[in-house]
Amino acid sequence: MTAIGGTLGIHHITAMAGDAQANVDFYTRVLGLRLVKRTVNFDDPATYHLYFGDHDGTPGTILTFFPWGAKSLRGRIGTGQVSATAFAIPSSSLSFWTDRLKRLDVSTQTASRFDESVLVLRDRDGVAIELVAAAGTESIPGWSNGDVPPEHAIRGFHSASLSLAGYERTAHLLTDILGFTASGDANNRFRFAVAGAGMGLRLDLVCEPGRMRGSMGVGVVHHIAFRAADDAAQLALRERLVDASHDVTPVLDRHYFKSIYFREPGGVLFEIATDPPGFAIDESPAELGTHLKLPPWLERHRSEIEKHVAPLAVAPSNNP
Ligand code: ZN
Image (cartoon, rainbow, N blue to C red; front, side, top):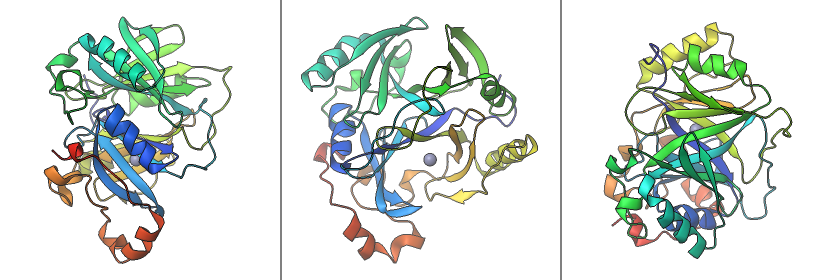
């Protein structure tokens, strides 16, 4: 049972990249995701904000990046961060992805976790990515740009791992307010899940008191966002977080969703983002990702912004 007013699972995950073009190439050409929006970081409009996901950028499928430039300082993955972002692939697709990644010069390791096989890899900037061969994934339609056959396509998030020095207070936040329930543990990994449909229903808290604290920079996750069905659900969650003494921002308009942010007890930056309005608010579904889109309040600065962000080459297969 989802707790009343809980979240619906993972909405998006945002990480820091180096070179923007290399970032686009890896996620669209290697992993076969769709670039669903090219905009800028609303808090730092000289930097791109690139969104990758399924055809529509459905909540639960969206990995986003702030590309800081090829020469930017690299971060360190550690405690107080999302330490791995896991995508779901069909259980029959493991050998396809193993072969494909090897051919594309991406080294992988195989792991087994809660009876599922996991391909562990890093993107070109060192962001920790996992492909989980998950039972039941076959029945979810996959989006394909032609590089990856639809039957093998990434379907969206399987889960994310949080590296924490201690996990109990974060666990309480998940179960008491965010609508998760404990769904298993193995060694130092504690899995939580929300009931419901869609992707990104699981979150793993990994208790690693001996690991170094993470530092911000290229190759690390900046924050993880959870889904609120609408504005009212988000406000209700905000009220409960404030009542529980979390330091939550006011509601911010992110154009494609509305957001609130707070730091969970283990140090990870959490966001609650609304499902609506979504990415089709300023581009047709067929054209998603083809133009630099700016929210109304940045549109008057467009010529200045365009001087700071380099043009991007995106394969036509992104918009078949
Ligand atoms: Zn976000």
